[in-house]
Image (cartoon, rainbow, N blue to C red; front, side):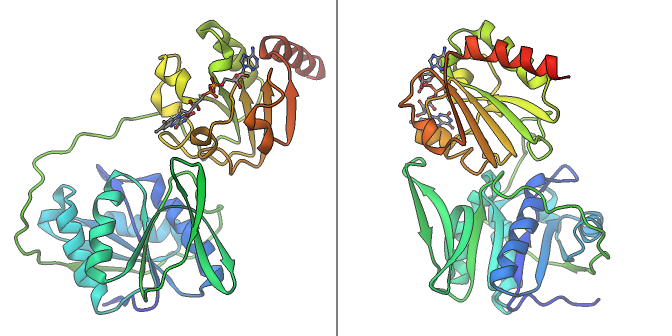
Length: 330
Ligand SMILES: Cc1cc2nc3c(=O)[nH]c(=O)nc-3n(C[C@H](O)[C@H](O)[C@H](O)COP(=O)(O)OP(=O)(O)OC[C@H]3O[C@@H](n4cnc5c(N)ncnc54)[C@H](O)[C@@H]3O)c2cc1C
């Protein structure tokens, strides 16, 4: 394919680092497919890189979507101005309906500037979408998760940044691979140059593979009681241990395990909240869980308002009993 038009399409901007596609890219594809159900339009992926060919081919194979690889020597290192300039040049003559970007540090860096140059609305931190009165509404948290706002766009093109963890990757399917188109870009001199980049904090955690999250809150009382939480996770397949911010601030768990507005957003099948009060900043990161079980000594704890099962009990009493019941069952 010689050219690839983006007019009237849903465009996903791939995120990558050190030759690897970042998981948020696959979430964006899943988000775009959900959006496509309300706004039927072809999905195109754009990947920007010094060479772009390998990444573009890999994306076309794994997602089944058409991929446009945009290459320029200035893309050897990420630079927000270069991204904005290239994307503006590609998209201005063939305006897409939507541009989907990760709500990551990079996405937050270039999405607003791109929206401004495209004269597009920019809705950031989107965690869900719905249709109300024939309008597509994008939900995002405001005031640190205390309020959920539904927003609509009034412009031809809308730039969206999507909260990581809100959608998960698209389900596995056998798809024919998409077309790949490569285009070399000329970038005019920018006012900033990236000298170096520091790798992301690496983590062995894969939230998308975790079907169960066992989460510890300040109510565990002491670091030693984390063992109870780990014991519980160890008997539940595909589970990981996470926590609320106080547990991370105390250094009992590492930051990559923090759930909430300043941590990860997760959507497991089952979320077990152990000694967590349900503050808005925590709930913001786990309210999309399939089934929520909370253990708390306080019957008035806010976490119970969104729990499917509410256990009013001391977790140090309840978890050993649960572990024994589970081991008898096995
Ligand atoms: C800007 C900002 C960003 C923030 N970001 C985040 C974030 O990303 N994630 C996050 O989690 N928080 C975040 N917070 C903090 C948030 O406001 C809450 O303070 C925090 O979530 C409370 O954590 P918790 O529920 O573990 O602790 P607490 O609110 O202290 O609740 C502990 C709970 O444990 C119960 N309990 C006590 N003992 C037991 C027991 N033995 N058995 C069972 N239950 C027991 C208590 O009844 C209580 O409900 C943020 C705050 C701000 C201001």
